[in-house]
Picture 1 (cartoon, rainbow, N blue to C red):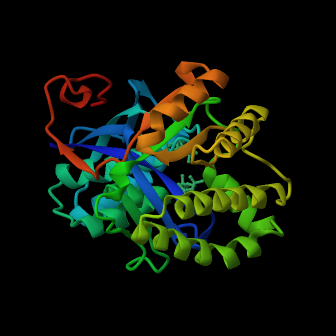
Picture 2 (spheres, rainbow, N blue to C red; picture 1 turned 135 degrees about the vertical axis):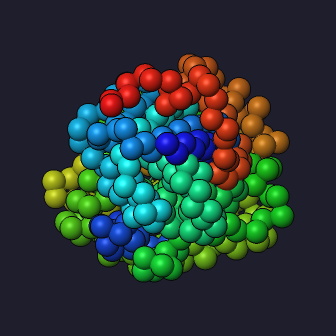
Length: 339
Ligand code: ADP
Ligand code: DP6
């Protein structure tokens, strides 16, 4: 029996990953750049045992459907091949982040699974190898191996992975405020949404043409600690990504009327002289990027328009963390174990 456990934090892209060049290997069409956060994370334990007759996947204590387990099994197959391990596994995961709501549960979820497998089978993977492995589970997960600002590079199976971006600790001066509009599972997953966009959106070529320029500006903003350039570039890049979905066939959007209200609030705070910028992912929730020194003032303003329970504050977070297995871990007991 082999056991391991890890925690990974979510990351939010400032330059979005939107589209795959290779669906099986999960190779992106464009480089992306994210900030790993401290407020949302996943803890996952995995046990490989000769006694198991199938893979099982429990999320927040509930056994997951056949389809969800199949996705996990495909990932476990990669790990089993690496370790030359023939055993089935039980995965127990806890999301300290709403699942599939555009809050990046797939990033923390698959990064934590990669870390847990690495520990369980003593693969001794480097951070680069872990990033490559996590990528095969979910693209954005490859960025959650690292803390702070992180870039994920296009490339082939060997060369596409994430690297941390040196920032002299500037990320610690930033805050990301989440405006929770809806934390229920979305209708169009990011996987399906980006596929439909690549295949059908007449705006997709514009996305690919302009993203390298956005990336360049964002890196310059980090280098020069220029918050205005960081914010303006982040917001513009998110709007471009969302524009591509509206030009897909059939068209779709992750925005809800409440998302638009949140975007308007951010714009009007800016007009009042409070520097803040929004970004959005594959869901209706809005994330507001600001400087930590303005966090309180911006929160006070946002509380006038949104319920305090809708607002969550996040700061820069760390990379993957190995955790010790404890006796209360479900996979250390017999809960849900099939023999
Ligand atoms: P999100 O915006 O939350 O990342 P996605 O649609 O991109 O939403 O991804 C959600 C999918 O990520 C889930 O359906 C599931 O397949 C996977 N996922 C989420 N949490 C976990 C977890 N803890 N362990 C493994 N997979 C997870
Ligand atoms: C909009 O990484 O969840 O959040 O690789 O298909 O699992 P798969 O997609 P996923 O997509 C994230 C899309 C995004 C932008 C981003 O995080 O860069």
